[in-house]
Image 1: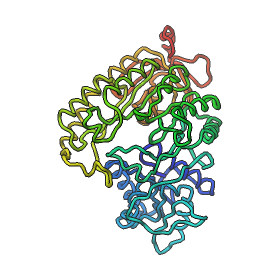
Image 2: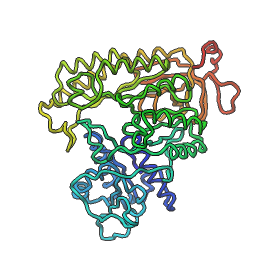
Image 3: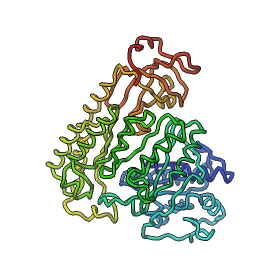
Image 4: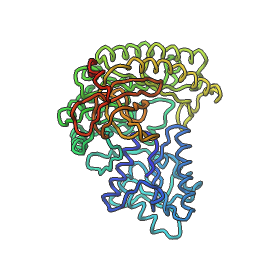
Length: 479
């Protein structure tokens, strides 16, 4: 399985893997050992689509090599959006699995194996127990199903797990096509999520990450009221002993302040807020159909820091949207300098088929958009470095994730202000601890993207070796 894109896609991959394992398929981690390769695709923006296509083509080339895989299955967002084109342009693909057909992946593989003369098999959601016809449509297919705790999952993240609390999205953002294939917003019940969280806790998971396209809207379609996400977090805190619970992707107009209050009161609900704002200038926000305005955003960020003083803030922005001028770009730079985000991501606008944004006039030239993107990241760099530098000398609880990918002489970990995969790295260069354990780590160095630290505690715990200089940090409080 090659899983591309966001954590929501990763959950879909885990459902397919869990289904296949339950049906007796052997799962291997080395592509050279695989008979069948599944590429779970992302179709969010042009670079994501290009990565998906490149990955599919790479596997298609491997099929032609001696000892290469015999079957190539394509799954996920690009199937719902571009199955017909993929079938025509890449005949090496043997089968497709759309977003509603994750539990049917084994039938797709078996169907592809049965076709000695080539051809394609595609299966969506079952209809009366029958597979969908093996045909392709030029129109996009909107997902309708929600996979809950009864769906098998083979978790591939060793220390943390993602809980997908909802599917789809109702927001009218003009730059985004996700609702066209992920469908309308639909939540899972609290009972279903608690059941899955308990299973993860029994497996030793140390961190639960609650995700959806619009996580702060959780439960409104189930009549949970405006505090639905708060109710869910409180239920998870009561039902499990998982040390860290965080949520990702707050929408500014649906962010419940009670979440921030809970962050400040409950150490296990980690103080971390990822609120993608996309822009700051009112002209751009109106063109994007985004709720809120820059002054309100700044008040929300200040309120988060007031209610949860140890909160870490992240946001994401788009540059080069149609009609963006230098004045708009300057406004965005001024905004991020005032906001002082701990972490920031940026995208160059990509016109998506079928979205209102794709039809807007006054396109920004690609070179101009790229320069604005570089300027955005460059403006954030000293901010990020300063905020990391402020951590030097502090002792923080850190979740050890394992050996560094570049060298076996370093460990990697995360403090609570770092979400998995997206917020840089915390390198441990002094001390030893096994993956999945919490240690007390003194931050010794700060860089714009990474932190470095040494293990100073806890004392006398099997498997944890403290830095020889650990006692020098004893005067610092662990926070």
